[in-house]
Amino acid sequence: MDNNEFLQQIQRKHACKLIRNSGLVTPAGIVQADIALLHGKIAAIGCSGWHADETLDATGLHVLPGVIDTQVHFREPGLTHKEDITHGSKGAVLGGVTGFFEMPNTNPLTLTHADLQAKLNIAATSSYCNYAFYIGGSAANLQQLAQLETLPGCAGIKVFMGSSFGDLLAEQDDLLRQILQNGKRRVAIHAEDEARLRQRQPLTTNDVLNHPVWRDAQSALLATQRIIALAEQTSRPLHLLHISTADEMAYLAAFKHRVTVEVTPHHLTLHSPDCYERLGTLAQMNPPVRDASHQQALWQGINDGTVDVIGSDHAPHTLEEKARPYPESPSGMTGVQTLLPVMLDHVAAGRLSLQRLVDLTSSNPARIFGLNGKGRLAVGYDADLTLVDTKASRTIDNSWVASKALWSPYHGKTVTGWPIATIIGGQLVMHSDEILGKPAGKAFCFNSA
Ligand code: DOR
Image 1: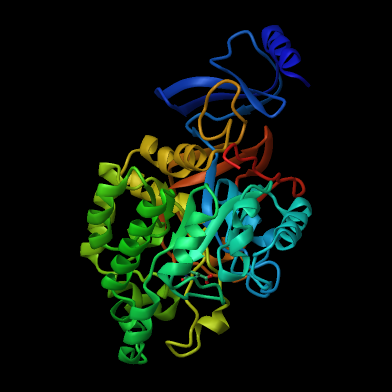
Image 2: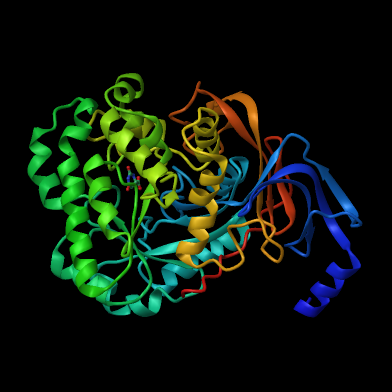
């Protein structure tokens, strides 16, 4: 259907689907109105006189623009005993997430056009939601980066400055500078200083409580300062992933012209030492979950605008792997499915508004990464929607978790706020904790590529 036909159909008021009686979280505020979906797009907001082929009664619910999780590890290919795109994307839609950007530390690493294409091929038949994949920035593909980042389905370049899980590492300033010089798009950065991590590793005892002592706040700050200096020299925009320290948050405020900032639900929700005492190595993550003073600074960044994006950093490992004695236990926890329930619980507790949550999980990801037609409830925008009950009280349980890892650090936690339905391209793909239909996700199209 071309645009004219779409317009004519809108004028004839033939809606395929109407969502009735909900609170729509729009750029103009929360509006109590019906919303009409036609051919995968939002056709009208406030729909008197529209004829519906299908109606969804959403009394008591809010409709958000679809949640986009810009940091997940779905482990396919190569590590599918931990996770795969089928299970990861099932978790996404059960958690109200309509699309994801996936990380390159799979096996093989995602370094070439062929590596990217292999992931896109798998996702085309197995993803329940929309998708894109990062390409790793390394010495091996340095010369190709400018071209690789423009490929369809590529979310951009991801750089690990500190080793975390897998072999992807770009440690030295020379290499980092060259990576930043090759291409234009915003580069996603895992900022922990590898030299300092190596130096401090002997400090590590066999107690996971020491994880944030080994990978300390200074390791994160040093790397963040180094990469920002290089980005300033090369005029390259950055997206700093999972910022975890008060020190970085204070530093970053001076570089908002250059840098967008992500924090994760686990850094906003768990804190040391409590999380390590309760969860042991299940709370082990890089960068580490830190003490309450760091967490407070992250919340300040949420509320003063320094933070742009909440991403889950869904990084599943099996319970057997996590049971290895620290520090052999791998870092990472599941998160894509719990991102929204955990953050809605923070909304219910008054820590941020629903509008700000939409900023952080949908509008900003769409704007920052260049996803045209996504990230807001507005006529002509894609009908990717997340319906939530902000009052529902539910207990997160491992039996609800779709990940192949089969566990969540929030098992047993009661939250207020729950995703009730996930709609992608106008199609209902999840309702009341049930997945409907077959995998039908599509690759994201970026206007910056
Ligand atoms: O804890 C983490 N685990 N942090 C990362 O950045 C990588 C991730 C993984 O892939 O397991």
